[in-house]
Image 1 (cartoon, rainbow, N blue to C red):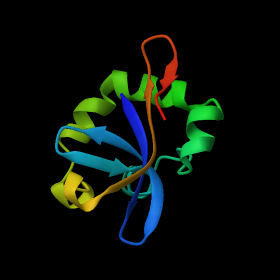
Image 2 (tube, one colour):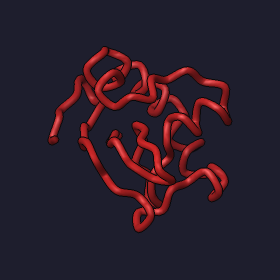
Image 3 (cartoon, rainbow, N blue to C red):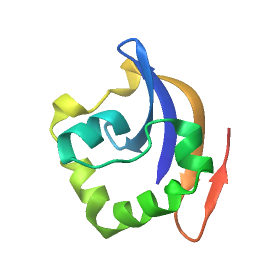
Image 4 (cartoon, helix red, strand yellow):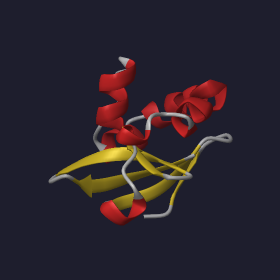
Length: 96
């Protein structure tokens, strides 16, 4: 799972990269009633990345890949401003 910080629509948020683009965590939190940190650094370095990776591996990936297109930021409409950080599989690696 890759987490990045993107700027889209005039604001920044941590986002999960999926095959069709990015799902911002602020949108995920609102739509799925979750409470993931929306700040990239807080998520990756604050210890929540591992919990998010577990959620992703336990069905979150399927949910995100099948989420309505209106919740996906296409790659061409997103500016990556932080990361990426690969989270999961026994830890996290920051590439940013």
